[in-house]
Amino acid sequence: MGGDMADNSTRCSWLYHPEFPEHWTRQPLYPLASWVNGLAFRNIQFSADGMPVIKIAEIKGGITGQTKFTQQVFDESVRVKHGDMLFSWSGQPETSIDVFWWYGPEGWLNQHVFRVTPAACVDRAFFYYLLRYLKPNFVGIASNNQTTGLGHVTKRDLENIEVAYPGIREQQAIACILGTLDDKIELNRRMNQTLEEMARAIFKSWFVDFDPVHAKAAVRREHPSWTNEQVSRAACPNLKPEISALFPDSFEDSELGKIPKGWEVTTLGDFVEFVKGRSYRSDELSSSDTALVTLKSFVRGGGYRIDGLKPFTGAYIPKQVVEPGEVVLACTDVTQAGEVIGRTAIVRGSRTYSCLVASLDVLIIRPRPPLTRSFVYELGRSADFVDHTYAHTIGTTVLHLSTDAVAAFPFAMPPSALIDRYDQIAVPIIQRSEAIGGDSEMLAAIRDALLPKLISNELRIPDAESFIARAQAAAMEATS
Image 1 (cartoon, rainbow, N blue to C red):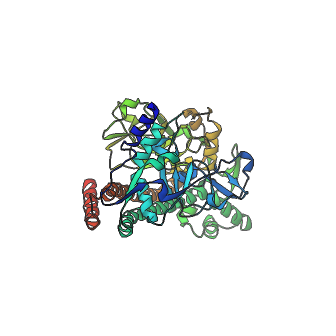
Image 2: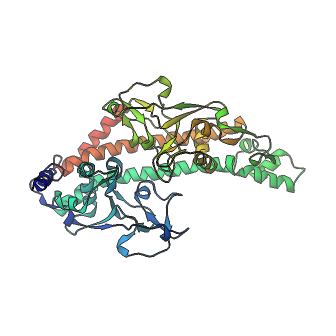
Image 3: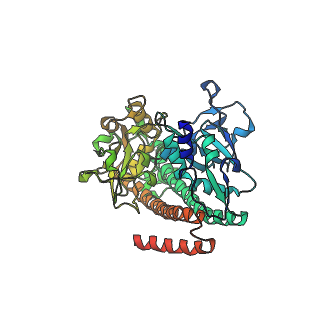
């Protein structure tokens, strides 16, 4: 009896009875959609190719080298298609419990994730934003259900949550306003991805695959009497002559194998200062205009996440402050696949925090000439660097990477003039990417402010456009 009373008390809390406009239709959440859970795959079902298995890691980070594949065929209900709505109901409450659109390739759904198909009475996009509105409730419920570090939102919880929804036209209007902002954020993400791929492709061609050197060597073998200018023009017609001239036309042996003639093998530690971040206590993570750059600031596989910052009130030393544009590296990892450790990111400026400090799990990489930030960032994203750092990690549940291991990474040092030429190409790309990222941060802030106002009916549809205009103007003024 006592247990029933406690259960009833929990059900009557705000977690299960969020606020909605009185005139909206009310009913439990669970009947408003079909919730199909994924499968518990066994290792024997995996193969080298086939369709990907979609876990929370894939939902948040896309298909990576750690993704599992299977050639087996399962029930169509667990086939994930482009545009499906997925709800992760198990994991770390603050970081894993959420709703997502799937925009990757077709795959099979793993356990702990629901494939959600809304009922006919609710607009599909509106239902997505309804679940986004309920995220604080889901996080609170999952935290209450937390065991061994993992929290859960169960079928019974979904049955006990009471929600509400307006008429279909109002649903569509709300979804249209919020969806327009999300569409722009997604477009910005794709633009940034394209920009990063451009910089990475040039780096790989010049400093990893040595494409211009191979091309010039081939022309030199065919035309040994030609001048350097003639060889450069014939071998690298798409490169400016002054850039092509910086590449030799032959290779020489080294401990790394064949490298361009005249380039020297060195280690990263010879030209980089490493600064270890600040350890912190949980009671130091409270409201502040200072924030920590943490492991959550890294995208799986490398890259920066602005939403990984944690407000911080503790002490730190000046060299632990991270300036926008600086390169950081994750030296700890709690993901079983090791998709974060040894990965680099370029820190962006924040509209929320005036000062950023590296946390203990983060290494600041400060290059000395002739190396530059853009060169070190891409070097850290190269396959050789990732393999080197992963081979030097220690630990089982938690992976660790020492500064000495990072410093020992060997590479072929190009001429300083060639590094400078790459920097002249890469820096504008990075700056453009940062500007796009700042635009997305502003749009996300507007969306997150609009969402509860529209769902609670605090802001009516006709007022939403003027709200967006005022919010954008205030954001522009704050950063001017």
